[in-house]
Image (cartoon, rainbow over all chains, first blue to last red):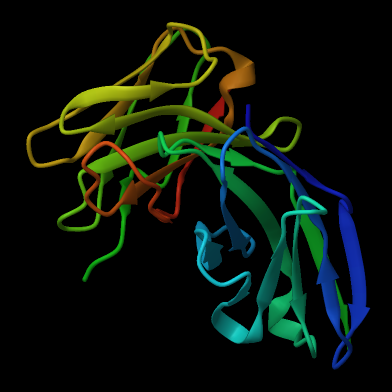
Length: 112
Length: 116
């Protein structure tokens, strides 16, 4: 069975400071993992994906995530938060059947 | 390439009615998935269609159904609407899959359904 746990429902950072959004996964298989972002009243946009290549994955808008099998984690980071990063972030695990399992989301607030 | 489009964007229906939502995937994408997003339950998988066949199904009642046409466009139907069906319904398409492997999904803007 596949599932993800997003450890924080809400994260608040100051503009220009680092962002850390935490995600742990559970998977019976070698997982494919994704991070998506959803801005208010918008659809979901893919930030990055891990599919068993490099463990450090770089995505759009300066985000990156590191796959750590020993910790079953796939945390999302960004060195310096921007106001436009304020949004809802979803960690997703998928199996070979192409079915996506979403976490409950982390709401990121960026304080000016 | 044009993105995933969903129509209508907003819909208001009354309990007991039925509704049909439409999704046009990115050109060349053969897999279309549907999700329900609510504040209480988050994002829940409804079903996935690939080459006009339902390949995966989530844990939703039979009132929720879908289909896919030969041009990969998909429709989702909800019959006998309940208040709890009020949600954002998201459609996503994936690049061609031969039945295995995982491909990132590209999401449309969603259809906001309100049931009164």
